[in-house]
Length: 304
Image 1 (cartoon, helix red, strand yellow):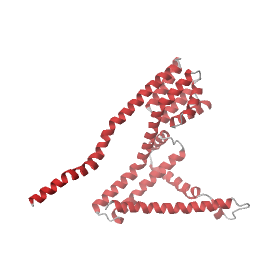
Image 2: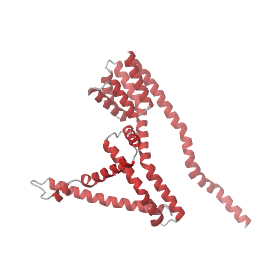
Image 3: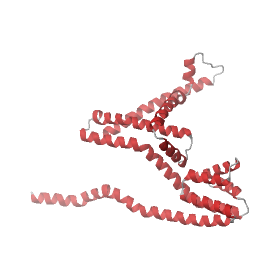
Image 4: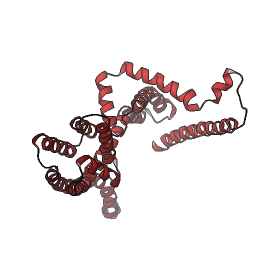
């Protein structure tokens, strides 16, 4: 009974958004066709404004105002933390930060709407209405941060998995006679992924004139992965004390393979514990009904 009104509400919202997007797409197609005509010109200011894409006419001004509201009511340290988390998630641009702050403002502003919908529109009763409102408000407050943290964790996991393979290829290339930067350039082209993108950015910073130590420290800050931090420290120490890069890379590759194996074993050990919750709340009740249900019915009929 509680699920059907909520599903109907979200379906209605989805249909409304779909209709708006369809109309915007149709108008954009018409404007694109008119631009292809030779000698097509717009006479008045209104037509010139309507010829602009919906993104520039409607979405960008709204996002700019929402970002301004978000920066006014958001602490500076929270904005800095969000910028760092976006960098770790692979989206370090200012546009992504503005979009996240705008989404935060929208989700917070939706809390009174959820209150009105839960108590006065869905007609769920006072207790159920407050329960639905609490769930929707909690999702509005914690949802954007939870999604961002999830993307951070997924990218960091991909980096942890790819690091041993990249180190193996890097070790082979360095022992074959290439320099560290040349070997890293060849390795980045052979192994795609987020870690290769970060290494490519590091090489770009070095070629632009930055010191290799500073570029590698920036790489550590952008990834925020313990394995990458260990690798960066090992390379920096090798440069400082004059140790052979090939020997350091081979030891790091062996260590990273061991860490990847330990990470896989850790995730395998956590799987039974994570499976316990759905088993207790979903599987066991149905099993008890099937196993104990006939016996209970027999006892009831026997006592009658």
